[in-house]
Length: 265
Image (cartoon, rainbow, N blue to C red; front, side):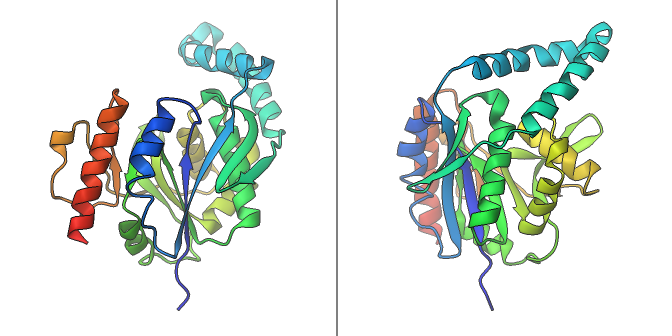
């Protein structure tokens, strides 16, 4: 039987404090021992600030309060439509540099959706995989546990799952870690012109999957740790969120998790 292949994509940023967490936390813990059926890659944008960067960031900062004001909602909706049309017609290049996918876009929170779509298109054309697991810098992923999870799934079927969040009438899988099958990803990209870049990227993905694919996310358990003292011997999860405002605490949580999980292997 052919092994189930999973591509783990880490949404990364090449600046501090995220680089410290990645280098001292992820790179020295869960990324070390990956099964042959799992490939781990990071993806980033280019650290540059131009008009496109400043305009998109400004729009992002004003979009939420404008949506809440009824008198400006119609005007904003029209602008949102044109902005989404503009972004969804862009096709930024992706460069594969030593295991890092670099997207030719400014590094901006407001452009994470466009960056993610570009990477999805790139991996679909250039990599052989059955599932992707999209995660981020504040996450610890037990790759053996992930492997054991995906082998129980049907590789040719649609699948979309993670820790479920709710926005308005939509369910979505949290961007800290969502699992999506190749078939579902293909269908998402066929509908990527509907991506709403005025929504957080994980919400925008969930809306497309709900409205165009008529699917809801499957629930995948995740354990969250905010302090080192909270980490215990329960290693039954494969995704742990280790988010703290002090990057060193996040690193310490990952290192303690690594010791516990390796001891229980």
